[in-house]
Image 1 (cartoon, rainbow, N blue to C red):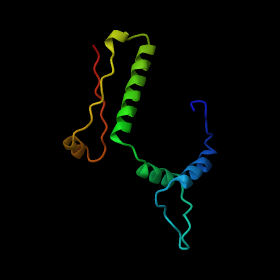
Image 2 (image 1 turned 90 degrees about the horizontal axis):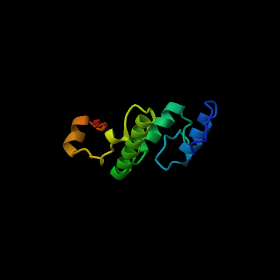
Image 3 (image 1 turned 60 degrees about the vertical axis):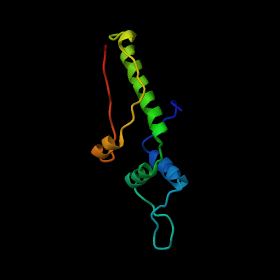
Image 4 (image 1 turned 90 degrees about the vertical axis):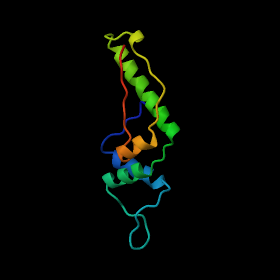
Length: 111
């Protein structure tokens, strides 16, 4: 999948195809057909209806942390003994409330 590249000129066509395959309710025109929407609106609706569980988000966080660790090690300026990836610490309901639906956090420390 890393080798797949979509030209900017092809992006709207592939986005429209992916959007059409989604099962969420779509805006309809007067005769009931799905409206032809601009790219930003299709992207917004797809993001709005994307489903990810806490486990999915934890797995993504772990993969991202490992990627950052690998990138730092690749510089050769930081030794492996100074870096470690720890278990994901999910937000508490109180923390989520404070963030108003935008839970993003990075906990970073180096030895």
